[in-house]
Image (cartoon, rainbow, N blue to C red; front, side, top):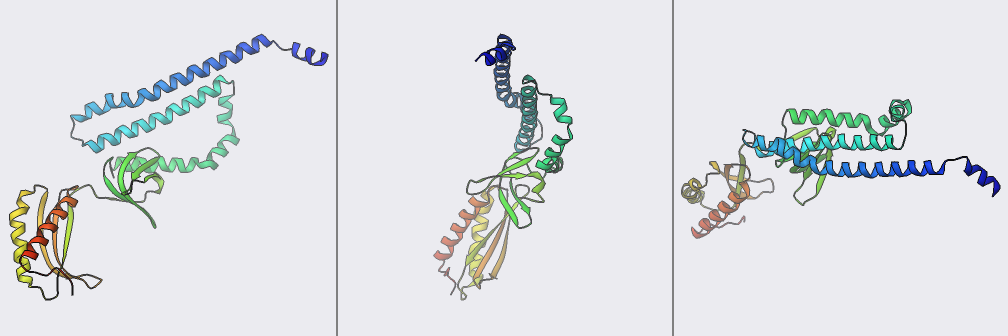
Length: 275
């Protein structure tokens, strides 16, 4: 006990406690400031950048893409500053650690090169405007194919939500081929199954009458083309009609005109079976 008493007497316990309390208060204050900045960054970006863009010729998807990108970049900066500040408060030699060859080697080994590749590829994706938030795209990397709606575009990753609701986080360096399905008119193809003995002239007459009556009432329809009888790879005999429509309207137009064709053909006594 005498040994431990003499050993502890060498330290200024009061000064140590004051230093610990000071560091703890500094960390708490830093956490509060960081929390406030994290909340203020998205609001500030939307107020400073999104409002002026509303009056420009850029579409909503492009505006959301720019906002998400700015938020992503500033979040990286905030986390870096937080880490730097914590190390500084704790009294660690931050500059020496950053300059150390050991730390640099570990950073490279843990993916710094991949991170830089993500940044470079993400920069060119944004520069060339390959896709924007809200657009439907297909992303391909060899045998890996992902199709869905762009949710977010960041400086390192792109987020895509597919048809079943799964959210995919894709490193930008892994995006090799982009198939954007949200720009320009989209083709809608309707294949009506027919009997091999169907009266094709009558089928064309019925379909043409439907097109003349209904197509003009749809502003989303840019063109209609009757392809005619076709045989599919599985041997099925069909009568094909193609529409070119405004992107986003393909599902509703397909359902509406398929129903109209089916009802009109059945009313005309045309068998919609493949026998």
